[in-house]
Length: 297
Image (cartoon, rainbow, N blue to C red; front, side, top):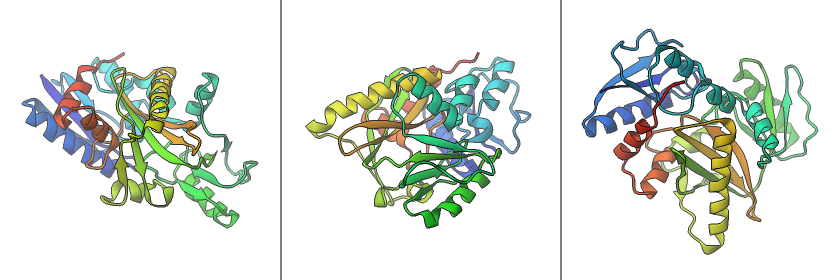
């Protein structure tokens, strides 16, 4: 069986994608699989070899997570890892995701969508300002004073092709994430970032952020709640195979869903591999298990 690992692409997350893809290639080769690295420079599959049996998607952002590459693989009848084209489109759009979560009765932070050229909000400070269709914390700002507002809007708007901005109420407390493989929720990972802000630098600079596994007895009901909510969100969006659901947990223990990542990272600091390791999977085991769920529409 020939496995193509697709990485690279044209999104803001290209460099992270290359790191993820390289790690996946090494893990699958270590497991004795025949692997062909495929680095995309454009948003199409013209460089994909014709004799590929299955694709492991390590293509973050843009074409990789907005349903584009999934739809192209569906047309070719090639199985691939992660959610299908429709679920990917929904999850990539944080505004559409939040609407669906709310419709399903799942908790998420209060929000507004500012379409260009709007620059005012009815929500009180503190706020989180982000582009609604990007990842890896690109273009995201925390606004605690109105003097920061104009710059935050400009940075977020510049990162969105439609010039839209998502404004969310900032949820104080802890940052947790729940990885899902198949239909199993992995152990919760707590993200202990400097100053309670998990931005791009905090994500990808080794040593900036600590990653913990909540173990206190008082945390156990919250852990179970987050795992249940993660699976509910996963199903609400129509995901399959794998995803990662991010949360903020208030000091009172109330979780709020932030977003769903359909192609989570596979770098040295990535969260899904950390959770899988906690559950007893080696990195190679995790990649192989994700491949087990590869399919197409």
